[in-house]
Length: 451
Ligand SMILES: Cc1cc2nc3c(=O)[nH]c(=O)nc-3n(C[C@H](O)[C@H](O)[C@H](O)COP(=O)(O)OP(=O)(O)OC[C@H]3O[C@@H](n4cnc5c(N)ncnc54)[C@H](O)[C@@H]3O)c2cc1C
Image (cartoon, rainbow, N blue to C red):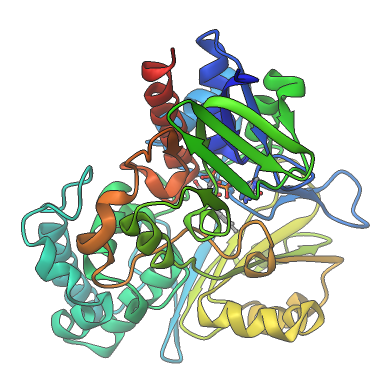
């Protein structure tokens, strides 16, 4: 006899949306979450010593075409604030820094032309990718037999053009292009509306932020589920057979007709499945490593970069402070700079510890904004690779061969076990919007087969 209709493993956005939709259909559900909080990769934290100020240490940005996320924001009465602010952004490549306005060009004319021709080729190749089944698309095998780095070397004719695409790869996947299958990069870009869209502020993936923080979406979803979300219950074992599932955590076993596992792929493999999963599935999760990010916030008594007519947005090829945004909340007297340390830089910084991270990140900011950057009133950093229940972000990426050899196991249910999580999304894979889409898909899947 099942305790509930559906068990959801993980109370990130995907898990909470799955449970929300199952409950809305009148079925019973319980969510088992390893952490002592909900939200997973959404995490809004107070800044120590600065009253009332919170920062998004996890997901922050909303695109106008994050339609599912926008619907949740509206449902919960949450507002957004535009990312783009007054002043010029800075782009620093190979020791040369350029100021540019929002609609302007961050690169010199020769590099701009090179990037433009490469973008056209990339876009044309991405058109061939079948979002529902990337392993099946036209040219899939050929694209999946090479890395994004080999494509960059073959396609760009200028050193700065090559650097540009390497930076883009780090900015969207938090890893270097030699680690990523070209097919995956094409899929990921198409999934989010195009490569340029992913790195654009106004109108793109970094268009706006949620006032008060993104984690509120998870918290509001969890509020609606109440006692059916159980925290500090890491799932260790899932026993499944023709009669049902039994999901084990420290507090014992819970039984259900179906289970939806929403934990990131790299962590899904640390759960024991009895009987074991098909080889394809086991292989796939071993071949979906996460990127690495240390997300830092430097809080200043005021946004001093406005004195220099700068917006606070910086892109640089010199680590660790390569990607910087002004994320000062509307109406705040403080100035907040968010620094995204990604890929190898994040791995290196994570090992050196928070104190060294602070010094290195501030030094990087000072190179662009002057010595005032060295003196914040507060500094918050979070190394996502060190997070036991995430182990890296922003999401997973696939190396060559994985999509075409075992990719079809990504969403395919195994008996009574279903899979969700942003990595399983067709649209906005890797983003909160994709997490919501995956939760809705998984909920529909289980609702269709519940007795
Ligand atoms: C630093 C950072 C910046 C980002 N920026 C953006 C952004 O600006 N915009 C955007 O749209 N997206 C962004 N993302 C990505 C976005 O956060 C994710 O796509 C999304 O939150 C993933 O949700 P999910 O539910 O699929 O996975 P998760 O949030 O990872 O949820 C999985 C849950 O499972 C739990 N869990 C793991 N193992 C177990 C277990 N054994 N038993 C029980 N529970 C378990 C975890 O604790 C977690 O709560 C960012 C992510 C990070 C980390």
